Every structure is written in structure tokens, then in C-alpha cells.
Length: 460
Image (cartoon, rainbow, N blue to C red):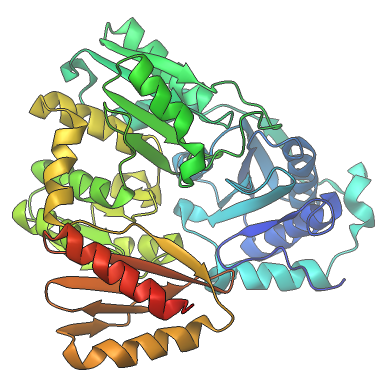
């Protein structure tokens, strides 16, 4: 078979049907069975219109390799992470393309204990098997299905687990806007709401774009894009809510809005969550990425923890968390990782923790983050397409290195200039350079240096 370009650095993703289709997914399922050599794999799928048929092809591929399949149905990626560890099975596969356009789909794969299968930990081996080994004529041959298939639910156990991170009975009356973006998050919110109501927890939910719909009538759910934030912001103001929460399609990332409807950069949430965990586990290690660091380091040190720098990307963060036995890890891209969640990322645990924090401190979210933003103002991530991003990074480094206090190459270049710093890195998937700038309490300096760097990156 020709080379499969749906295999990316961390997962499988491609446009339907030329880059990804039932035959290719069957092959990947069959290859995964061969690679994992386990007796049981748990699978699930998001709300995309193509997910049910791809999940069926995946199941057939796995079962053709003698693997028993447990199907948890419509779910988010973190429910697959949870089910894989909770059920103690040898692997898990989520059919999803997260926040990609609606004509895309894909898969995220894990092995036992929900350890990621990415480019350098098995994904390339599965790709080679899928390309070279199997006869896909077996796709519709039910006689080849030696593994069993069973539909199951782990939702109650999953809700038990994520609510275990907080004390629901201690929550104060609160009104929360929740925007599932017509993705897969709605059923989890409904289950949490039912638990709260049965226990008389005074938290009310205002549901926006709540029903799962693979047609994405309100656009692809990706609140990292400014144009995808308005509905959440408007609902917060309309309902005078205490906080807004929005998710991407498979809800492994959550994005928060304060009571004024203002979007809160994920960077500042990392510091808050680090502080929240350190109040329960003094001296613990907190993993963070290199793009923006000063606020996280300051908050973690002040709370008596140990900040640990790690390269950006879920596979790197999860590996480093296991190595350090870190209680929590956070990326500014709104991925948050938890030791007790098999070191995996969750889009549900963060907002629960922040809700509890608001109750404990009796403060508004805006006031919790305002002092942090003032202390370490940042640019947020700015992307620019370039023909030669690697050369651009070296050119900029040459201009600043002689006056730099410190230069770090953990991920791209991080250059500490004393009163301000910047990180420049290349996208893993496209010829794009990503810039982040922050300063020590000087908004004007941060803005000036951001403009200066953008001019150097893309001279007119």
C-alpha cells in the first residue's frame, strides 16, 4: 500500500476520504493488534459524522487480529484514557480529529496504563505494519473476527473519579456557562449536573451549543481561536455568570472566561492549578512548558513547589511527569495533566478545581488572574508562516544572544533578556514559527518587544 500520510507526530489525522477512510482505519486497527499483542482494547468516538463508520472499521481490524474490543460509545478522549487504566486493558483508541475541520477525522492511541503511542513510542511501527502487511479485503469479512465485541459504559466511574479532585459539598452558589461547541462534552456536563442536583450542590449550568452535532452548526469547536469565543463571552454577560467554560470537540482542553466574559490565557491557569495542587501536596513537582514560564515558576515557588521545565507536547509532558512523579503539568495551550489521572490530560478536572478555588478564596476569577497578568504580562502565542522558519530563528538568536542573561534550547529558543524574555519555536506540522513574549511587570515593554520581534520575523 502507498505511504499513509495520516500518521502525524502524536496521532493519526487526515481528510476524509482521501487521507483517511474505512480501509485505512481497518489496516491501522489490524496493525495495532499486531503491535500491542494484547487481548483487549477499549475504543470510543467523538461526534463527527464519520466516527461511527470509522469506529466499526477499527473494531473489525482489531478483532481480525484476535483482540477483544470494548466500545464505550460517544465520548471524549479523556474517557478513553480513563477507561484504559480503569479497566486495566492493554490499549485504548479514540476516534477523533479534535478541532480540525469537519471533513477530517483521526485517532489517538494509548497502550497499557494509558501511556501515549506517538511517533517515537510505537506509532511509526504501527504505520509500517498498516502500509506493508495486511490484506484489507478482510474489511467486511466477519469470519475473520476472532476477537469479541462488547458495548460498555464507564461513565459513572469516570464521574466518580473527576469529582474526587474536589469537595463538591464545599462549593458555594455559582452560575457557570458551559459551551460544548456541539462537541462531545455535553453528556459529561449532564452527568455532573445530575450529581450536583442529587446532592443539593448549589451550582447552576447555563448550556450553550450543548447538543452533540457533527455538522458543527456554530463552527468547529476550537476556543483557542478568538472567533470561537464570542458565544461563551456573550452568555456569561447575559446570565451574569461567575465563569464561562468552553471545550474543543473531544474536550481534552478547556478554556476559561471570567465573570466579565474575558477570555483567560491558558498560561495563567497553569499557575493557579499548580498553586491549588500544592495546597494539598506541599513540595510537589509541577511540570510546565517553555513558551511562557515566569508566572508559573513564581507561583509554584511561592507555594513551596518545584517547577520542572519540559518540552512542549503531550507525549513529552506525560513522559516527564511519570519520570518526576509530578502531581500536575500544564501547557499554555490549555492542556492540563494529572498524576492521578494516569498522568493524562483532562478538560474536565481543571474547571472543577478552579470552581473550588473560587469558592475557597471567595474571589472572582478576574481578580485571581489580574495580579498575575499585571506581574507577568504576556503576548499570547503569535503564529507566522515562513518559508524557512529554522533560519529565521537562528538569525534572531544571533541578534539577541550577546545581551542575553540565559538561552535555553529545550524547545526552539527561549531567550532571557533580564526584564523580558521570548520563546521562538517551529510547529511540528507546518512551516510556521510560534512566538511568545513576556516581561516583568512592564506591559509597554512586552508590547514593544513583541512588535520588534514580529518585524524581524516578517520584515516588510
